[in-house]
Every structure is written in structure tokens, then in C-alpha cells.
Length: 232
Image (cartoon, rainbow, N blue to C red; front, side):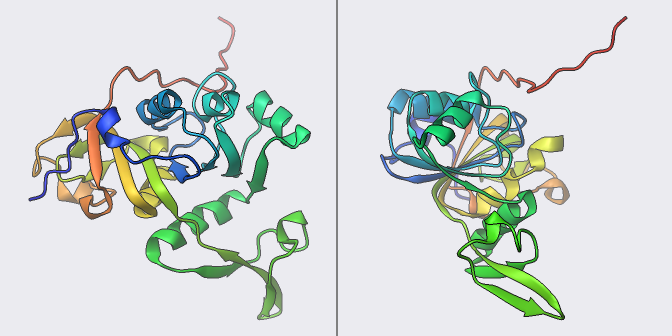
């Protein structure tokens, strides 16, 4: 069985260059590839197109890439937690393509499945639909949306094995599984890396065939975007 393990994040990100399109998994700050983002910061690659549901927050996640002006374009759904993102958008410094959340997920899934386009009713008659082909099906109007693919897809899983099979935990299962299928090179960072054969095949969410590089991450902060507590 092929061993897809690399020794560290530096080896995992070999080949990342200026101007590439990257997918970064996670939902909010949950399940984001923290180690890969830190390495992107160190590499100081520029003019990136980043595909991610969120844009992180000002001092964590993709927000750090935005602060260093490494991102040229964001393709996202929800970006309301990042003041620097808002500033760059309003000042014209950042290209932004906003998608309904389900549309974004399906565009990524389509990229992984080799489906170049599909029709959805979401966004018809709004700014989302401007310039896009529309068509009527059974008396209802639909927009044509195209697939999304990336040069690199960076995903974060709870457990993985040396063959690249992945298991996600809870909310981290949002976006990570479909992004893992849509990158020319998919890099998985995991909290726990085990030998091939130790994972229950019935529990695997991403088969190893989609993953080219895997490593065990370290020093996860696992921040929470908004913490609400009740008074004692």
C-alpha cells in the first residue's frame, strides 16, 4: 500500500507558488488547516485565490493571509467575522466572489466529481445571478453554476492513516470532505496519524485515493469565533 506520509508541513506544501488557487477546508474556525495556513504565511506566497466557506477572523485563519496581502481573490459564502476582509473589499483591494452556501458546497463537489456545470434556483433574480446563464425547468428558473477546482486543497481531519484515509469529527466534516476531492494535490493534516489498516473502513469519510500528502499537525489552537456564556 502506498505510504503518503510526509515528515512535516514544509514538505507537504512543496510546490505552492504565487498565483495559485487554493481550497482551505473548515467551517468558521472549526476544522481549518491551521498548520498549512501558518506555512503559507512563512512562504509568503502572493496573488492567491482562496476558496473557503469563511475568511477566518482578523487575527486567525485566512484572516492572517489577508492581513499580509497574500490573497488576491476570495471565493466564499460567509465572511461576516473579518473586519480586514470588509475593509479590503470596500476599498477595491480584494476581489470577492460570494456564493450561497449550498451553491459553494455543490460547486466544490462538482469539481471533485468532474461535473463542469449544474443548475440551481439559489440566487436567481439577485446580484448572484448577474451575467450567468439561466434556464427554466418545470416552470421554475435556475442559474447555471460552474465547478470549482484548485491547485492545492488543504484539509484538516481528526484521524488519518498512512494511506491517506481520513475521518473528520463533528463540524469539521463540513467542506473538508468535498474539498479533498477537488484539488490537483490534496494535503491532509491530522491530529492523529495511524498505520494503514487501523481505521474502521465503515467510518472513513475521505478515501485515501483523493489524498496525495498527509502529516500529523501540531499545536492546534481550535479557536471559537464567538463564545457566549451565561451568567452564573
